[in-house]
Amino acid sequence: MPATPPDTAITMIMTDAANKNPSGNGPALLRLMIWLSPSFPVGAYSYSHGLEWVVESGSVKDRIQLTDWIAAILCHAGGWSDAVLFAEAWRAADAGDVDRVAEFAELAEALAPGRERHLETMAQGEAFMKASAAWPDTISADVAVRCGRLAYPVAVAVKTAGHEIAMADALTAYLHAIAANLVSAAVRLVPLGQSDGLQALAALEPVILDVAARAGQAELDDIGGTGLASDIAAMKHETQYTRLFRS
Image (cartoon, rainbow, N blue to C red):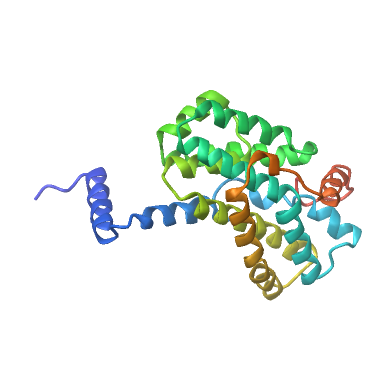
């Protein structure tokens, strides 16, 4: 009996899985888990978003201070701006409006407040688009031709829209990935134990859900924040004497 070609076998498996999961949520969930996993090759582990300087300066010394710092970033600083841009870029990509996506991509890059923040968002966005090309879609390909490099939130937004992943789910997963990466950095920097890290993530759950819900309804005029300490920390990190992270 002839062997089934690998591509045909994979197609058969995917068809069977779709029949068993008619809601279509299976592939979307799997792709979100893969694309926003700590192991996905975007280099997230090498960035601390200025947290390394904050720990060095003594502003974050324990789990409570870490949780408050990350919550402030998500609610009032770069996390909020990224979330609003994510939502807007997702809607534009979902509508197939490549020119509109390009506008958000340009704005996302311009909003980076310093050299290291610019590196952080652009390098991760570029790596994400390159790695996620294993799951091709038309809108991502069109945006890549039109825009070239993309800031990280715009890259994830475009890719998830291109694969018909609900914006609310994608944005929530994106914000969780940001928080989880900062907690991971703090576990190494403070240092914190794994239990404290997990408690910090648990405490941040309602913050992540709230920011995702508000950003999903926000408009460009809602971009802005009061996270000056976070921006200054990222700039101070540029000249920090001993560094483990790139930002």
